[in-house]
Length: 377
Image (tube, rainbow, N blue to C red; front, side):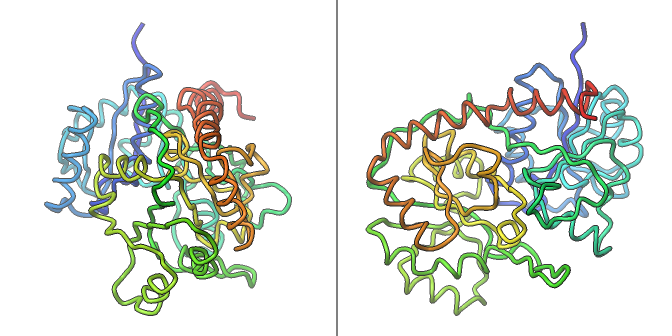
């Protein structure tokens, strides 16, 4: 019996030098492979620059994707990696497309695939852009819709559903690629992220902001604990006031390229951490969308506890052991102290959480049952 075929489309090299972004997509590619699927990775980009092609080639080589991956220049048949004819042939026999934020829009590829899943890894913002008419989110090109916003459509969540029945899904982790690291009780609490990713959104009089807006409320955190904090933040040098405030409040800034600029560096940065201090985009927390971070998933799989800003995800998954959430600065301090007091136990609980909730076989198996085998009503 021939293997089922899947296409995955997401940003790996569109913004080169982000190892965590590449890993977020690769968890789906590798997870599907472990389930026995024939997987093709297609990333559409507006231009095939040298930086993008070199980074893409390095990631492909790192994960041994061989001839089953390509950068595709939008609006053309020009590729790096597999040629366009190979992509068309793969799409013709594919059972499913996992399309992150609807990136892949080429009709010659999409229209051949019977199950086209819009994979929403940026909940609240994708829906709000659509509701405002600010951008074409290409929802109509898809047959099913999965979101990392675990509470979209539920009471208390302010994100418009846009008339769509969203399937909540946790970020998968391929546990064989993320072994448990030895506890590091004297290391720093860390995280990786962008100070700003794009503009904030105002909708129905509510402001949905970026990580910068959430982080400012936590500037005083290092002074409230005995722990060290090291953050690999992509932050513009123009953000002088915020950079000064971070330094004044004892946040150690790591160069994001050196710390996490490749998949391997990203893994190493997480494994040498004591735990994660997970600060969400303000829009995730304000909307109560239940966003769950793929980055936090990698920390947990590595046996690293996560102290995460509450987005409502705790309504859908167990928190308190290994994964702790906070809303206020005082709650963040308390959670950090709890992790420090019983560190080894929280490390073990972190890995157990990943095995129970985030294992790629479980997460992707459930999603595929719903979108391919027709169990999602």
